[in-house]
Length: 231
Image 1 (cartoon, rainbow, N blue to C red):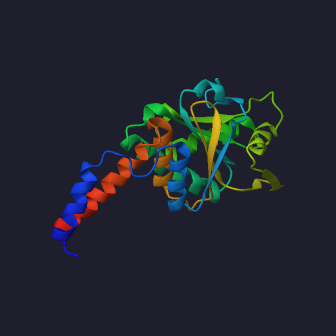
Image 2 (tube, helix red, strand yellow):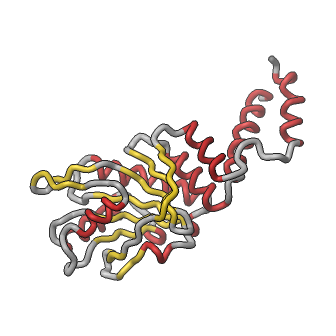
Image 3 (cartoon, rainbow, N blue to C red):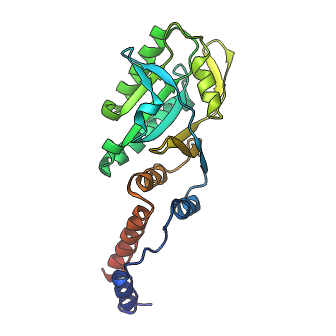
């Protein structure tokens, strides 16, 4: 079919104001699920926690109930999966900024280390520096010195993720990125290191702007397609 033959269909699409896909959060999740093999959608209260940041200030999850929260757990002495996880989320943060959503989204990274607090905070600071993260909306959290060594590991377990010490300086663990909505509901888990950052950003966009926000990207793809055909 020639580009000229596509023109009536394109004109019809442009004149149609009814959204093509998403009318509810569930509809949007269905569309994203088609694109992303590593996402698991859930709907349950996100376990609250209060920890300290690298400056020693107390930060609670409930402080951000007007924001979408992207939460992950790392073992800062990990030399393989955790740096790759942080690099992936640095990409997500960049795309969030490009989409002008940075004021609506908070990133929280929790360290599960059982070693000394000072050394762990030094490692957390190194992560923020090495990956050139924008700290205006990214919090690195850890237990304070008076709390038990396993405090943050237990928080990770409340999110369904285990960090088990197996040797000195080694923890066996999975890799999951959690997405929490503005009401404190855990909405999604992106598993592993192979998910497409854009799909996480699309989901965050839906939570911030509403389900029909997903349709905008669909319209963009359609318009690009027909522009390429016409060109």
